[in-house]
Length: 129
Image (tube, rainbow, N blue to C red):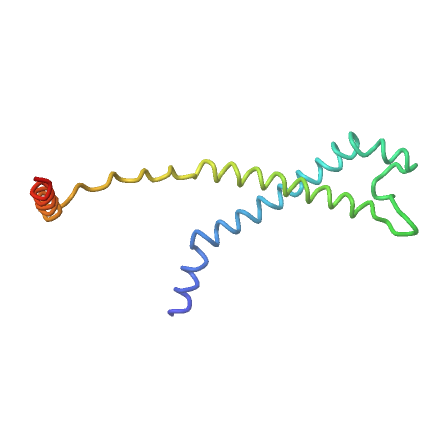
Protein backbone atom coordinates (compact mmCIF):
# COMPACT_ATOMS: atom_id res chain seq x y z
CA UNK A 1 0.00 0.00 0.00
CA UNK A 2 3.02 2.29 0.45
CA UNK A 3 3.62 2.53 -3.32
CA UNK A 4 0.10 3.82 -4.02
CA UNK A 5 0.38 6.38 -1.24
CA UNK A 6 3.79 7.58 -2.47
CA UNK A 7 2.55 7.82 -6.06
CA UNK A 8 -0.53 9.76 -4.95
CA UNK A 9 1.66 12.23 -3.04
CA UNK A 10 3.95 12.60 -6.05
CA UNK A 11 1.18 12.96 -8.64
CA UNK A 12 -0.76 15.54 -6.72
CA UNK A 13 2.16 17.62 -5.54
CA UNK A 14 2.16 21.20 -6.71
CA UNK A 15 5.16 20.68 -9.00
CA UNK A 16 3.53 17.98 -11.13
CA UNK A 17 0.27 19.89 -11.43
CA UNK A 18 2.13 23.10 -12.26
CA UNK A 19 4.04 21.25 -14.96
CA UNK A 20 0.82 19.87 -16.45
CA UNK A 21 -0.75 23.32 -16.51
CA UNK A 22 2.41 24.72 -18.08
CA UNK A 23 2.36 22.12 -20.87
CA UNK A 24 -1.29 22.81 -21.65
CA UNK A 25 -0.79 26.58 -21.67
CA UNK A 26 2.36 26.11 -23.76
CA UNK A 27 0.39 24.18 -26.39
CA UNK A 28 -2.25 26.91 -26.52
CA UNK A 29 0.47 29.58 -26.69
CA UNK A 30 2.11 27.69 -29.55
CA UNK A 31 -1.11 27.94 -31.56
CA UNK A 32 -1.23 31.67 -30.91
CA UNK A 33 2.38 32.15 -32.00
CA UNK A 34 1.85 30.05 -35.15
CA UNK A 35 -1.16 32.17 -36.06
CA UNK A 36 0.81 35.34 -35.30
CA UNK A 37 3.64 34.27 -37.61
CA UNK A 38 1.43 32.88 -40.38
CA UNK A 39 -1.28 35.54 -40.33
CA UNK A 40 0.51 38.73 -39.26
CA UNK A 41 4.30 38.54 -39.56
CA UNK A 42 4.40 36.73 -42.89
CA UNK A 43 1.93 39.02 -44.68
CA UNK A 44 3.34 42.25 -43.23
CA UNK A 45 7.07 41.64 -43.22
CA UNK A 46 7.80 38.66 -45.42
CA UNK A 47 5.41 39.20 -48.31
CA UNK A 48 7.62 41.83 -49.96
CA UNK A 49 10.55 39.42 -49.80
CA UNK A 50 8.37 36.53 -50.98
CA UNK A 51 7.11 38.57 -53.94
CA UNK A 52 10.69 39.30 -54.98
CA UNK A 53 11.38 35.56 -54.83
CA UNK A 54 8.22 34.99 -56.95
CA UNK A 55 6.63 32.87 -54.21
CA UNK A 56 3.13 33.28 -52.79
CA UNK A 57 3.54 31.09 -49.68
CA UNK A 58 6.50 30.82 -47.35
CA UNK A 59 6.25 27.00 -47.52
CA UNK A 60 7.07 27.20 -51.25
CA UNK A 61 10.48 28.78 -50.65
CA UNK A 62 13.16 26.47 -51.98
CA UNK A 63 16.76 26.55 -53.13
CA UNK A 64 18.27 23.77 -55.24
CA UNK A 65 15.31 21.56 -54.45
CA UNK A 66 15.54 22.12 -50.70
CA UNK A 67 12.34 23.59 -49.30
CA UNK A 68 13.41 25.80 -46.42
CA UNK A 69 10.27 27.92 -46.10
CA UNK A 70 8.71 25.83 -43.32
CA UNK A 71 12.03 25.83 -41.49
CA UNK A 72 12.23 29.61 -41.77
CA UNK A 73 8.69 29.90 -40.42
CA UNK A 74 9.60 27.63 -37.49
CA UNK A 75 12.70 29.70 -36.72
CA UNK A 76 10.61 32.87 -36.67
CA UNK A 77 8.08 31.18 -34.36
CA UNK A 78 10.86 30.03 -32.05
CA UNK A 79 12.36 33.51 -31.85
CA UNK A 80 8.99 35.02 -31.00
CA UNK A 81 8.37 32.41 -28.28
CA UNK A 82 11.87 32.94 -26.88
CA UNK A 83 11.46 36.72 -26.76
CA UNK A 84 8.02 36.52 -25.16
CA UNK A 85 9.20 34.00 -22.55
CA UNK A 86 12.27 36.13 -21.80
CA UNK A 87 10.12 39.21 -21.25
CA UNK A 88 7.61 37.23 -19.19
CA UNK A 89 10.26 35.73 -16.92
CA UNK A 90 12.04 39.07 -16.62
CA UNK A 91 8.77 40.69 -15.53
CA UNK A 92 8.01 37.94 -13.02
CA UNK A 93 11.52 38.16 -11.59
CA UNK A 94 11.22 41.92 -11.17
CA UNK A 95 7.94 41.43 -9.28
CA UNK A 96 9.45 38.74 -7.06
CA UNK A 97 12.66 40.65 -6.43
CA UNK A 98 13.26 40.84 -2.73
CA UNK A 99 14.38 44.17 -1.35
CA UNK A 100 18.03 44.24 -0.48
CA UNK A 101 18.68 43.61 3.17
CA UNK A 102 19.64 46.78 4.96
CA UNK A 103 22.82 46.14 6.88
CA UNK A 104 22.28 46.39 10.58
CA UNK A 105 24.08 49.08 12.49
CA UNK A 106 27.11 47.71 14.23
CA UNK A 107 26.44 46.77 17.79
CA UNK A 108 27.91 49.04 20.43
CA UNK A 109 30.86 47.90 22.46
CA UNK A 110 30.30 45.29 25.13
CA UNK A 111 30.87 46.02 28.81
CA UNK A 112 34.31 44.38 28.62
CA UNK A 113 35.25 46.52 25.66
CA UNK A 114 34.07 49.68 27.43
CA UNK A 115 36.16 48.79 30.47
CA UNK A 116 39.21 48.13 28.28
CA UNK A 117 38.73 51.46 26.50
CA UNK A 118 38.59 53.28 29.86
CA UNK A 119 41.77 51.55 30.96
CA UNK A 120 43.44 52.48 27.67
CA UNK A 121 42.38 56.09 28.03
CA UNK A 122 43.65 56.22 31.63
CA UNK A 123 46.99 54.75 30.58
CA UNK A 124 47.29 57.27 27.76
CA UNK A 125 46.58 60.14 30.10
CA UNK A 126 49.22 58.91 32.61
CA UNK A 127 51.84 58.55 29.87
CA UNK A 128 51.25 62.06 28.55
CA UNK A 129 51.67 63.74 31.93
